Structure formats: C-alpha cells, structure tokens
Amino acid sequence: MGEELAPPRNRSGHVPQYRHEPDNDPSPRSCYTRAMSRLSRRNFVRTAAFAPALLVPGMAQATLLRGLSLRDLTAQSRHVLLLTPQSSRCVSVRLGGRPLIVTETTARIDDLIEKTEPRTSTVVVRTLGGVLNGAGLRVHGQAELSIGTPCVGFLTPGPDETLWVTGMAQGHFPLESATTRILNASPHLPELVDYEHSGVRALVGRELDEARLLVKAAAR
Amino acid sequence: MNSLHKRMIALLALGSALTAAAEASAFCRATTCDPTEPGGCPANKQGCETSGSPLFWASNCVTVSVQADAAPKQHVDYDTAKASVERAFAAWMAVTCSDLPPSITVTVDGPVQCNQSEYNPDRGNANIVLFREDEWPYPGGQDALGVTFINFDPKSGEIWDVDIEVNAVAEPLSVEPAADDVDLDSLLTHEAGHLLGLAHTQDKAATMFPGYSPGSTSLRTLGYDDVSGLCEIYPGSRVTTSTSCVPRHGFSALCGADQPTPVSPPKTADDSKTSEGCNVSRRPQSSFGIWLAISTALAAFRRRRRGFY
Image (tube, rainbow over all chains, first blue to last red; front, top):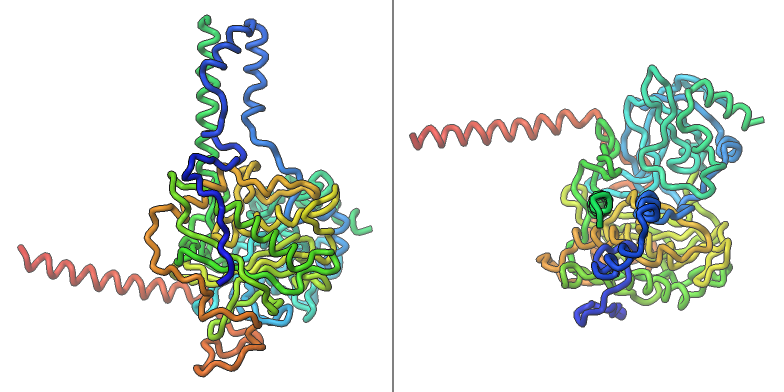
C-alpha cells in the first residue's frame, strides 16, 4: 500500500547529519593539542570564558504557535477572568463537522480582570483532547487547567457560545500561589514568535494587580 | 601546558559532559495522561509528563495519506504536499538506533478524499495530512501553524490513528520559503515527530522544540535529542506484534460519514454531543476497585504462603 520511503539506513557507514550529535563532533585530539600550543595564556582564558556560550544550542526564534500581543490577546477574548478550576470531564462535541473529544473544565469565577463579566458564577472552559469511552485524544499545545490552581484565563467564545482559551496555552496564566499571586506561564506553553512583544512576556512574573492594570491598558 | 590550562580543560570537559547528558535526556514522550485527573498531568524538570503510559505504534509499519485537495490557494498542490510529507518522514526514517534502523517505517500513500481529522471506532480510517484553507475550526487556536490529533488506547498507550492539520488560512506556506513564509517541510517534520509519539522538548536544537522562525528550514534536520527520542520508542531490537501497514479497522479514503454503514452497531452511542466521561468524581471509585482487588490478591497470597509453612 503506497510506496515505502527508502531512507539511507547508515549500514554502509553513512551518517545522517543531525544537529548537535556528539558523535559527529570533528575534533580529534591532535588538532586540539596543536591549537592549544598556539594559544597564549591570555587567549586561552578568553576562549575558555566564551566556551560555555558555544556549548549552548542555537535557539529557534519563533514557534509553531504565533505569539499574540497583550492587546490582541485581550481583543480576541470575551472575558478575562481570575478563575479557580473546580472539576473537569471529557465529552464528545461536534467541531469542524465531526465529533472530537474535548475536556470541559468548570471553573469558579473569582474576579473579573477585564472585558465582559459572565452572568453566572462559574464558566465552563473547553480544551481539545481527553479520554472518553475507552479512547484517548491528545493535541499538543493546549492549556491545561489544573483543578484547584487559580489562574488568569483569557476566554473566547466558540461557534456555539462555549468558551475556549484564547491562543491555546498562551491565554492561560496559573498563579504561582494564592498568597503571592504571581502569574506563571501555562505548563506546556510553546516558545512564541515575537516573544518580546507577546502577552506572555508582558504578564508572566507580574503580580496579579500589576497584570490587571496592564490588561486594562491593553483593552483601551 | 601548565596547571591552569589543565584545570581549564578539565572544566571544559566537565561542561561538555554535563551538556551532553542534559541533551540525552531532554526529549519527552507523549503519554496517556488524562488532564482531568486530580493534579492534572505532572511534569518533571524537562517538562515531560510523568504520569500515564507513553504513546507508541504497536506495528512496525504506519501508512500516512495526503488530502487530495491539498492547499490550492497557497499554490501547494497534491504532488507538492505529498513530496513534502515524504521528506518529513524520511528525515525520521533515516535515523539509526545502535546501528539498526528504528523498528518502525512510515509509508506515504496516495490521495484521500476525506478532509477531516477523525478516528472511526467502527469504520475504516486513514492517517491523514490535511490542509485547512478556508476556516480554522478550533476556537482560540487560530494562531497554531499546525496541529496533530493523536487517538490512542488510554490503557496501553497504543496509537490508533493520527491526523495532522496544517493551518493554511492565514500564514503563507511554501516548500521554498521566503522570509515570511512557513516552511512546509519544517512544519511537517515537527508534526511527524508527534505522529510517532514524541512530545515537545526543551532542547532548542531539536525539531521537537516548539519554536520556529518563518522562513527558516532548520526544523527539517533532526537534532540529537530527536534521534534519542525516536530510538527510545522504536529501538531496532523491538519485537512488534504486528507488521501491518493498514490503518486500524481497515483503510478508507473516505471520511466516516461517507463510508457505508457498518454491520455492527457503533461503539459510541452518541457522537453528536456531550456523551460524558472521565469525571474526576469517579476516580475514587475506580481506585477503590483497584485497592479491593489488590487486597483480595494479597489475602489469597498470604493464605497460600501460610499453607507452605
């Protein structure tokens, strides 16, 4: 059925070029010793000082999830709330024309941060994936609302008015603790494009009241 | 070489060793972890989930199909899309694990008409790479460049069906990307890693690091971390229970709704909405059941041991 890919299997000694493969490091001792002999003490110390930086892998600067600025994150949300997830369950919902397993988390509304206030004291927030009727569905990059952990949630309505997290994991900020009330990033948040201008950059590490002022300013 | 040099070299060697060690253990496997469980899905320092069973393909062969329509508005026709999918999986299949090929091969099949990511528990399936050009149907997720849906057995971790959706609504896609284009090969190589059972890693040199710069082709090339992850899941010495390349419940190029009605009734009674499951309040009952079973077994074992004295 279909043609099978015929990749080089390296049986003949060919080694595919992987990034950061230690075995591919072309630094035989003789070359190293020869280079060392040419180094003055001062140059050697300088080189050694910068060596750790060379050992750090090159950084990919963007993501498979585009970063949203705080203004966009707020603009795309109907509610920005301080929430405490109370319970969750998995259900099958029709989305994009077919059934999908989603997790519905019921969360208590502790405070309105910005945008409109829901009429109820709780909201139900959906995220893709879960386990239902002996079948599991995993979708990477989703927010993970942990039961009992207060969080700031940017919520956007779906086509049937159900609420979802805006920007997947980038619209979810669990609080470090109930006492310090410092915003953390969502546990499985990917690296973001243009992180420096993202809402995540603006809010993570901020105390709740400070974050509230920033969100209010972004909403204007 | 004086003593300072020797000490510097020793420090550098130690640093290299520590870096290599960190790289070797950085990859993460996707697991069956149920986020509705109390405590959610705990993760270790590397960000890897520590609960649930790791996901894997039981067979040593998986077939992937490409949506027939591909992405015409993005000037990505079927042949271009298929070739890109082939290159993405070829990067993974080129890996060697202790001088052996990984114990899985991926074949790329012909076009399928189905343009939905879905798993049919009672009808034919296909692992599809599909493109959405008109609408991205996932509320709040419009900023994802691609999403992989992994359907699995929550008990064993066996992967049943995987579909990859490419968001072609907003971002320009290309296999020869200009500065602001999304490189289709890079995107698919990353999503192919998810299809094989890998989760995101914190190793920024890896394809499975969830970071990508438009215009870049860097994710086409696997990192050491990616190779380590693939070889852990599919070591060359793995004994597989199946060699079938056919998707679960047979191959179908059609979506479930377009396939003939199965003879046996569907396993899931209501697909339309809210068939409830995995409520956290049910957990203590199941724990109690497990505890009861263990207690009974222990009691029986003690009785047997006593009988031997």
